[in-house]
Image 1 (spheres, rainbow over the protein chains, first blue to last red):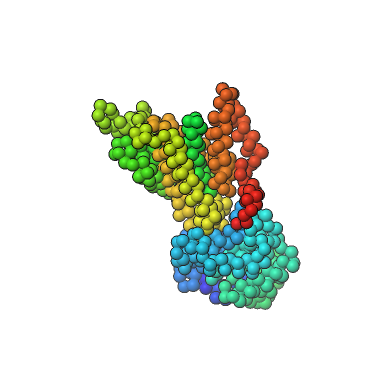
Image 2 (cartoon, each protein chain N blue to C red):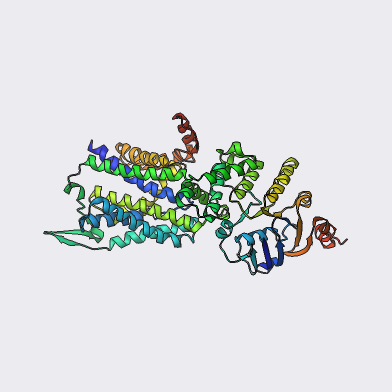
Length: 248
Length: 299
């Protein structure tokens, strides 16, 4: 689904991401972990095009997207959430999803009128489904800024799903959540994968990621130090060293 | 009576000017170029009716197109700058337009009369309305018909996905891009629509005053253009109308009896209103309760 080949991003002398090779198979939950500053968020920003790559290439479903502008990538099948929530606060919950669903309308060349004026029944159904999935169906007319923190996180997820992506990038979706909310999130991410969407999950919450990831890569100082199933990664000496600071 | 009709004309044209800034402000761009677009619309429309003998509506359509195309061309380079830099760039544009018309002579003989723009002297004798027998009432009704059409179009847009996308860009450009929105297309479209509306405002203005000159289209006018929607609130087109009525009707005309004290009070009252209603005269909450009052469902 997504392939990063020799991907690098240098900020001056700092190699935030250094010759990273990753291959994410369709239908997987792929976990990306690593200590703070190891280059996880930079990787997401490279995939989405918010940062330009220094060298290397990014391939989505067989097509190279390395030089495409952000909005083209994110209307062609990638969707994302943000580590620090970025909603359109003064828009209603419904409008937040309506804006995002536009990407799908564009992809499928919906005619101008139904795309912009919103007479499209398909769009309404999709938005309603995404809201129900995220448990926000009764909040459709609320302003996004007035939602509680947990609801805002769910709204970001719903907004990402509204465009019906092939690949979903989740940047620390569990940050700031209580254990109950994390359980619900765990369920939702599994359901998303089971519906056929490939998930790239960046997370600090080890319990969550070890429980649901099909495969995990570990970054440290911009380099991949290990990759494998959750069990393999947990047993890997380099991973223990990166997290605990001592070998073995 | 004529005084009030004249005031209605002023309020109508300023409402259009405010709405032109309203569209652009929704995408988070503060543009002081609206006065320049209005000047272009004013000169183009007046030259078409006076020099080429066109009917008014055709002249207004072309004036709006020319101003809109100019705005589109200004929109592309203006995209590269944000915030205060955009303010400075658009101030420069308004000044360029003003200085262009300061030096712009294009006069032709009409009988023993010279008509057309004459640099610093301005463009006199734009006598379309008197020549065609329009009364002040006709003109006021015509202007407000145009205002109503533009307001209806924008009100409809506000409720459509296009409106939501404009506001999304205004709120968070990175999140908007990450929803697959093409920022360039959205911002340039808003700028173009704003320019086209300002062009209509200029065309109407030229014809009801009968005399335009470069000094009508200064940075001060551009500041008024953005002050209306900001003071009125960006949640609805009605806020802009309310702000124009408040400023042009109440502060400028209503307080005229105060003489020189008016200007002092003018500034103080605007500051006061901004403090009492920081998100505008008609903010989202007011609009919601108005809707409830008229028994319609929110949405």
